[in-house]
Amino acid sequence: GNAWEIARPEETVEVKFGGEVYTDWVDGKFTCRYNNSHTILAMPYDVPLCGYDSKIVNKLRLWSSKSPDHMNMQEFNSGNYVRAVEEKELAEVISKVLYPEDNHTEGKELRLKQQYFLVSATLQWILKEFENRNGQDWSKLPDKVVIHINDTHPTMAIPEMMRLLMDEKGLGWDEAWDIVTHVFAYTNHTVMSEALEKWPLDMFRKILPRVYMIVEEMNRRLMIRLNEVYPNDSAKHKYMAIISDNQIFMANMCLASCFAVNGVSKLHTDILKQDIFADYYNMNNDHFYAITNGITFRRWIANCNPELTELISSKIGKNWIKDASELSKLKKYAKDPAFKKQFAEIKRNNKVRLAQYIKEHNDIVVNPDSIFDVQCKRLHEYKRQMMNVLHILAEYNRIIEDNVYAENYYPKTYIFGAKAAPGYKRAKLIIKLINSVGDMINNDPRVKDKIKVVFLENYSVSIAEKLIIAADISEQISTAGKEASGTGNMKFMLNGALTIGTLDGANVEMLEQVGEDNIYI
Ligand SMILES: *Cc1c(COP(=O)(O)O)cnc(C)c1O
Image (tube, rainbow, N blue to C red; front, side):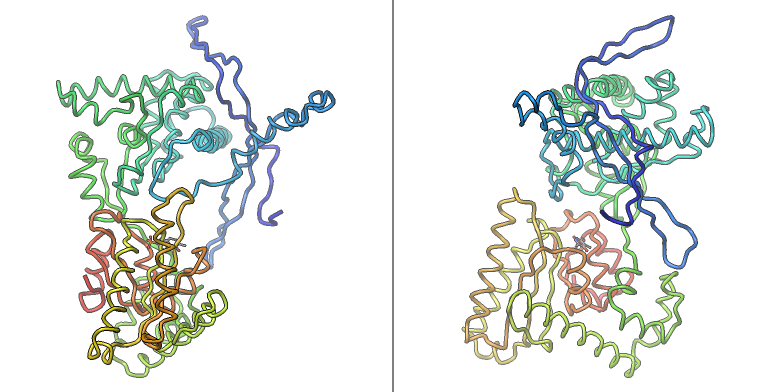
């Protein structure tokens, strides 16, 4: 296995799915009994994580799903081989693979089980840790614990926390709700409707009957509140509801429960306030914050671009690696010819290394003295790789048809890195298109030494690290309003590429920082 994953079998917890729930009041106490539910074990694996030049080691806790039953030997002995291993397989599939969808949700049963599995195991652990350190005064939980709902995927933590506090710890609804509404903070990552999670009510109720009861009660109380704030506005109530049209809306569950809500750039937060979450913003405007995404300079310069790191440190010392604001000390070298020459050499060295990688992986020879024009990011229609390809075709046609244009054309290498979810057919077709255009252009002697097109497969952080440090031009051309933030844009800028982009997401704030001579809108 992985030497950095430390198994903690003694901290295994149970997660229950399905069955029927029976609630009752016994001696004035609420009780909850499950029948025919299915238990799956969650086993923690801890990964120690230390920061740069720090004495602190944090713990990343990962969960593995396991069946409580070993292979059923009785079934096996009676010849039913498939049944004998089926239960075990079904339990373990929960933590087997991650859905590869990007800004899209499909509402699949396994995905719902995965979300609840991770949420329930983690909350049980958090409550246990709190109890070990602070005892059972649950009202102190918000002083010690903040839970970040990072996109809607872990939203079920909200009703699950209600369930644990009420059913396991014996709190009443109002006490539990007061705690829950001071513990959770929600970050929204997109305004695209196909990405906003919603679950079919029947599926949710079947898989999580007790959590569903709690969600229903949350929605009932929300409706009472909404009717006070927006009397008789049934369209608004429906838009803001947790449950409507036999579906459960996870973003609304967050908006109705969290003490803080944020977007991931200034522009994106404004769109949340003025547009998709405006009704919640009017009701709770002190809950909304703009928190612009950032990247780690230690990976995206210090680790991936050692020569540039060395050059920077030789001028301003090493402290910028801990305090990025110190990079502004480089300003005085902006016009220094020796510095500029060294910088250009480093960029060229990175381009030579990338050219070698491209030769090895794509068997295409590219010229390191051509302009490297790079678009690497998940493949998505709103990111407009398609528009980039059409532009390449236009340049290719013009080189062939227009001699004056061809003579003045500075050689260019267009490089793409992208991957898409298997079911996203149009994205796959765009990948096919980029490869086909590349095959045509790279083999056309009329544009030889002028233009090349490369598509790198299996886009990943490791490939991004090689690509970004070798880029002259950074393509950030999303459909305006659709890219909530973007972080690729920042990585390229850090490594000295010029940006071509729409005024969208964090490009807006980057323009404010770097000025119009470094980013072309
Ligand atoms: C930074 C990064 C992204 C995000 O890039 P955007 O241009 O902001 O979409 C995606 N994938 C990988 C591997 C990255 O390193």
